Length: 614
Image (cartoon, rainbow, N blue to C red; front, side, top):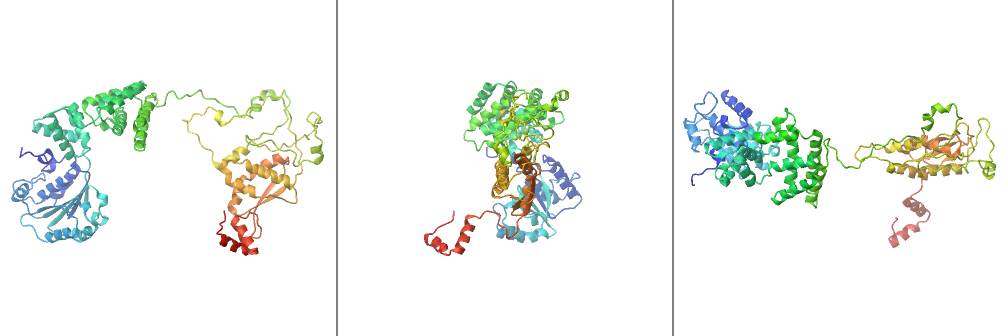
């Protein structure tokens, strides 16, 4: 009992060949030793438990070995190797920077560096967790690290390279240690189990390796824990019970229920998982990983990405054959969204249950069933009937041209711009004489034909799952004005006055969509002025920016005014106002300033009563 040593220490590698999962780095270090090309400073960085400090110790032992083998390993027989193995070597110093991170500690280290080694060729200083050094300690260490004595070699080890000063990094050879793969950990655990005469199932060791997350030290610590729990007989069931790992079988059963759209069974399986004390977030992340493993199991090229045991690998391949890639990708997306919203949700169980219901409603193509989709309806354009009946156009006389209006525009007010005699005569369409030649009445012709209804977006069968391209605000007014037809060439050009022009101008401003609210406000403050030719009107704007906006709307404005005023010759001119032309309305502050100039007593009144302009 007194001599018990944990596996992480007992089976710590003593040679480069015994290091697991870092073949490229160990080969580089061995070649550097063999060629006598040693740097004065090294930086070993990487995750926890992957062999940084172990490789630093092996490297320090090997470069001081008096009889290095042909394979580049220490002999373990010379005085230097014996002293290192018995932990009495004065050539190798280890410093924990987490507890010795002050300037005084670094100065003490610098004093020791000056003393040459008594046995061997190098004095090696291993500084673990070097990122914990203070800023002052780093600065004090810079000069010695850059130009140390020829007998001194520094090996810095850290798990957080980004916290080290760039000036330190530039003085070191950097070796990045990677996470150890699950297969390598399982293989090493099998070796340890054989040496300890422990029975272990491969699937059980695979779970331990996955739980270790790439760290060999963590894997050996978990291995010792499971050995104590199982009394030397490690099984898959005992491992998932001891480590609180959710069994693969739950996810296999759940996926089968998803494929058969069994929502009730899915809810019961999740309830069973919660009863066993598993966290909901852990469950949903595990389900996401299960979908991912199924996806990589579908292709032989990606099958090597599946880090599970042989027996479970066969289950994955069998179930993956039943699932389509669309189903798995859509399922992963739903589960990932649930994981992202888990912390923010107040009812976490309901969030996961809703996700399970959504996944259970996915069909083989990854689309939800029971969405209420109906057959897609194709709506014919409201004004394309004439083109559909081209075969009858020659036999039947062409109907009188009618003006179409946008959905939100009213029919033209014909009282403005018409001669007084025409407005006062109250001629009905039945009393109007038949038109001969090109002259026709501007009044709309009453028809008993059935009108084509205007379809609104809310009444169309539009799927919310299909992506709809939003129409830019700049094109909204253009789309609305496309339905405004110019007055036919058969119409007469009626005269109009400035009052009628101003009324139609404001009416157009009120019909602009919400995206054009700024331009609508500008138009309400403008007053178009009719020029001498009685068909061209001028609009004054504040600056060139507003001028460009009005020029963009000019085709729609002119088309609408031509229709409303029944005059095809309406033209619009836009001009930036001069300094002496006041075309904008004064604000409350500007009006107060103008009034106070005429009557200074207003300022005294404001200050006396503490008034503020609203």
